[in-house]
Amino acid sequence: MMRSIEGQSIVAATHNEGKLEEIVALLTPLNVKILSAKTLNLPEPDETEITFVGNARIKAHAAAKATKLPSLSDDSGIKIDALDGAPGVYTADWAETSQGRDFVMAMTKSHNLLEQRNAPHPRKASFICTMVLAWPDGEDVVFEGKIDGTIVWPMRGNLGHGYDPIFQPNGFDITFGEMDRWEKNKISHRANALEKLFKYFAN
Image 1 (spheres, rainbow, N blue to C red):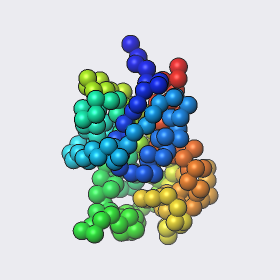
Image 2 (cartoon, rainbow, N blue to C red):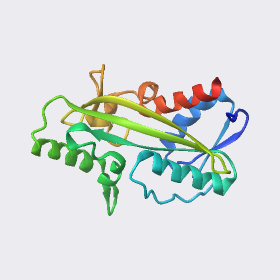
Image 3 (cartoon, helix red, strand yellow):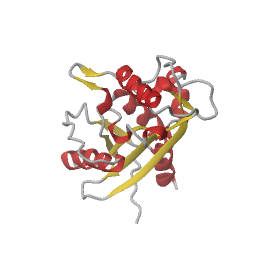
């Protein structure tokens, strides 16, 4: 039997303020109260899985167990076809430095690898978002979102985050990095996953 979340408090198992705002905006019609892992001082668990759904499950179940509340998490990244799907689940890892994350470095690395492989144009890629809503008793449901596009170079735009300046979604002539944040949120991989979650509970 499908569970209801209407009128409940849900933990957004993220310390990312941007993700939190997107989740709150998209789930408002479901009449749920969104609490953030950051304001609840929940630790960020180690993401030790090699799949998006595996890492999302780690975060969602850790938050649900700690708070005794339904918890929603996501794991997301970019898969570049000509790099055999890399960086994929290691998207954030490619940006790690001793001083924090450097996505300009990560995007440059991606471009250089494509050049080394003499990858043909258009250089196809997809942003993937896998969301998991977990309950304290261990049950969960999974929602996957995706948006296809191409890798462009040089980087364009200073909006968004991560690999947005080199990702041009299909049907658009601008990158995510050039796109208004709320316009991007209407079509993004995360919006796609949240829309599936919304439909699941709205029906």
